[in-house]
Image (tube, rainbow, N blue to C red; front, side):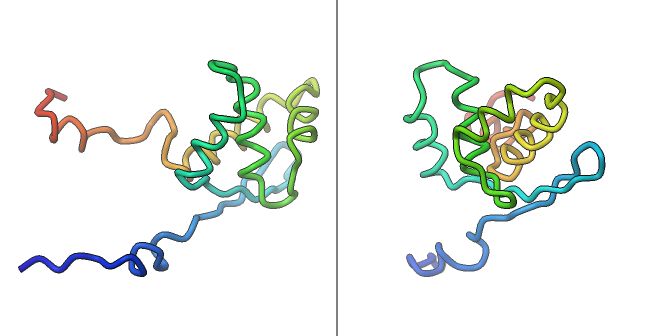
Length: 117
């Protein structure tokens, strides 16, 4: 007989957000974390449809742990010339930790829907 998880088990140690250090140019280090599914959808609601710039600003402000950033600070950082590589590293790390990066494995979905790889 299958033993199913109770609600408390769903919030156990496995469900804790992971965080990671990101080394930026010049050896500077920041700490980021993945967003919860709730936060991901909340971020989407905070921006106009299809505005990837606004979404990345919200994503960084929500996922940056050290230093913490407001949306205005994240936008200012993103607009600063020469920061593209660092902003990209941070944004990519937050997406990866959230589980929505471009390389996220979709093979489980193909198996469920019987699609060829």
